[in-house]
Length: 233
Image (cartoon, rainbow, N blue to C red; front, side, top):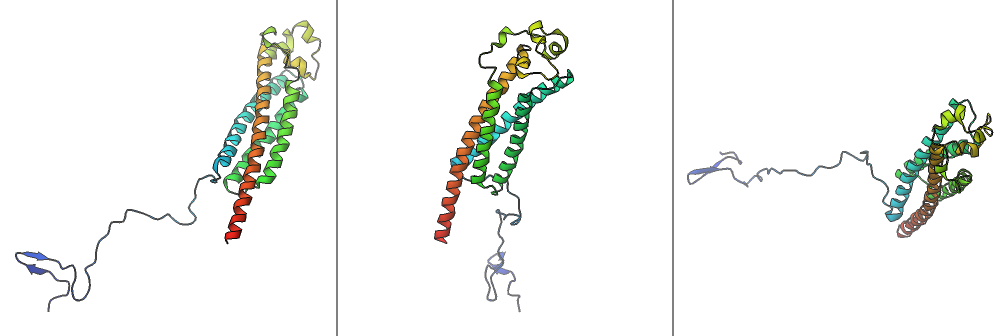
C-alpha cells in the first residue's frame, strides 16, 4: 500500500499531491514581520502632548543653553578675580548660584517629564519662582550697564588691570572685595561680557515665563484627558 503522501505519476511527470485522503500537505510561509522583543523593551520617545509638549521641550533646551553660558561667563569672572587675590562681587556670586540651581532643576524636571512622572502644576509653581529669581538677577546685573558705553573704556585685559595697570580713578575704588560697578568699569572686554550675561539673564526670564504658561496648559490638558478616561471607563 502506498504512503498517503507519496508521489503520484501524472503523464510523464511525478507530482507531490497538495491534498490526500489523510491530510493536507504542509505549506511553507515566509515571515517578514517580527514582533517586539517583549514588554520590557526600552523606548526613547517623549510624551505625545501636542504643541504644548513641543513648546515645553523647546523651552527646556533653550534654558539649558542660556544657563550653561551664564555659568561659564560668571565662573570665568570669579576665577580671574580670585586669581588676582580679590573677592568677587556679590552680584556675580548670586548670578552663578541661581544659574547652577536652575540648570539642575531644568535637567531633573525634563527627565521626569520624559518618563511621564512630572507634576505639571508643581512644575509651573517652581518655574514661576525661578522666573522671579531670574528677574532679580537680571535687575542687579543690568543696573550699572543700561547707560554704560563699553567702547569708551580701556581696552586692556581686566585681570592685569586689576593688579597693576588700572587707570588712577578706577584704582582708587578697587578694594579687597571688588564692587560690581568698579568691576564693570575695568575694561571693554569685561563690559561686553557682563552685558552678554545681562542679555542672557533677560532671555532666561522670558523662557521661564513661557515654560510656566506651558506647564499650566499641560496640566489642564492632562487633567481633562484623565477625566474623559474616567467617564468612559
